[in-house]
Image (cartoon, rainbow, N blue to C red; front, side):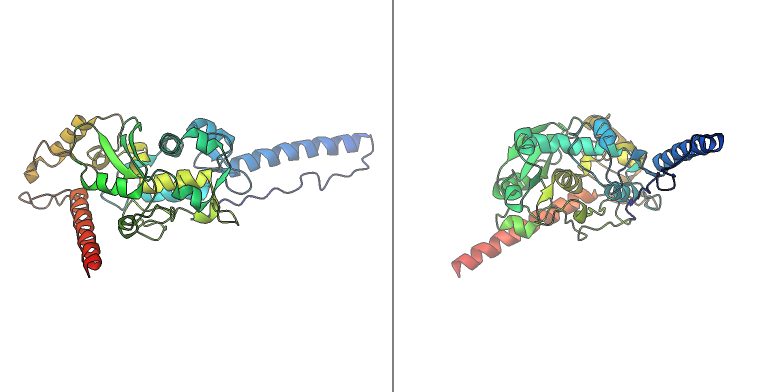
Length: 329
């Protein structure tokens, strides 16, 4: 995506410093004032991205922060949100979950998670965070999909991995479990904390074919000394937790829980109503996205998230056995 890179010309550069007090100079002055107003208005209009003002480097201004409910010192780059919106609302994707994305609410949701898991005191203690700081953050948490209230925190990678392996994804309480930041299964298995937080399963880049992976634009949040800004931490939360995204959900999105006004029972009913002809269990609760082929009424349907969870658990068990075997050898 193209970032916003607006530049402001010196609006006084053409003014004559030795203007004489006569009718012509007065007229020129009035024209200059009008030109100044026109320039300011033009800059204001052209300097908006996704409905919000951005500064000359492309970061949203404090007006956006107020709407999002985040501290003024946090900077979110417009190119990041452009990629998120592009990927999430791709009309060519029949399984997209959103008609539109409310970027302010989405960033606000990420801040709710981060401030609960890491703590406001920690976030307020410094402007930027080193990889060592990030490695010492809690590594996972459980939360309510509707309220974004964190109900449990897992401090270590091992604690989170064990909890994830035994988590009941079909619970009816709208409780979800998530890693704080992206962390590969292999890295988790080694007990390592997440530090490659802008990565994803698409190398941190966008993929319009999945409606999941957006360009995290790591360079917009990484300082020359390798530290990460607070805005970068929020982007990393959004990158890992798809339920931070908020907006107008599609019919598909509603049946997958992306409409926060719908509780777990309503989501389950939507899911069943949508797939009643596919011989689904009406009590099936879906944690995430699914794939439906409506060309065959006799298809045995398995939600994609269940397939992914099964594969992940199988991989974890495989890695555990391989580790035990290496120890014995």
